[in-house]
Image (tube, rainbow, N blue to C red; front, side, top):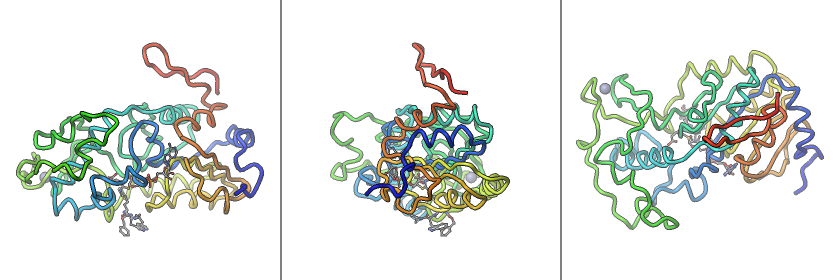
Length: 308
Ligand code: BV8
Ligand code: ZN
């Protein structure tokens, strides 16, 4: 279905808008980390053994079977630690350094933005982090725990796939999971009573209210020139609502970067843009006039040539 207006996927038209944009918001989802090899929630990646990932990301699932939910999270911690930030993470971090009026909101809990040295004052992790650990009962928390395995009882989640190219045994519903009794899981070192749990926001849980207020203040402060909506299905609230809120101050370009532009631009306004493909490849190209060309030095250091 042809886009409704000629500029929708025009990189030149997008670049013309980008270089004049002072306030840019990004709302990122699991598709941003796909190029780093991490599965998204929808599609094949969304199924963990025979569980829909969304059903495991709830307080009820954790209460019912903390061992199973912890095995799911321990596996995702291991995957995220093994993964590396991709060029899109680095491009967003460089955009933050070059555009002080850029704010990145991410739904991802994989810590890849932080590992790409994204300036922390221009990053909000809406749904927490796999590497923040907190107590189910008191306010004890450990901000950055990267132990892998997380504990002995969860060691099965931290093994690399013995048969690469085939599903990891832990993903195979026919391979029984080692049982993980609650007493084998780490308890809170402070109150002793609570269990340690992943410091992520589960479905049905509130996001950090102070953070939400800050985001609303940032959006409402002045006109937002551009919202980059990167690799997200836009299903989860309140994250899905920020792009429209940003429009309320005037001509804001909503720029969708997604493997599948499902609506093909239908419903897009004439100031909007849409680019179909892998965010890991597209984003560095789209942001080049401001961030320059990404160069990987011999020592693995990422440099940027040109740009602002
Ligand atoms: C809350 C952490 C108060 C855990 C996650 C209205 C208002 C408020 C709440 C609700 C509401 N309506 C419904 C609710 C309840 C719920 C909700 O939104 N439900 C949905 C399912 C309808 N929201 C909540 O519960 C939130 N809490 O608001 O509290 C409240 C509570 C109840 C009722 C009312 C009010 C808390 C939500 C946070 C949940 N925690 N993560 C964990 O990770 O385990 S969400 C989790 O799923 C991820 O963090 C992520 O946010 C989400 C998955 O979404 P995406 O990131 O978009 O990923 P997805 O796989 O869906 O899509 C990937 C996209 O990438 C696709 O479009 C694909 O095409 C594209 N793609 C793929 N590859 C690439 C690519 N794009 C580019 N390049 C590629 N290579
Ligand atoms: Zn405690």
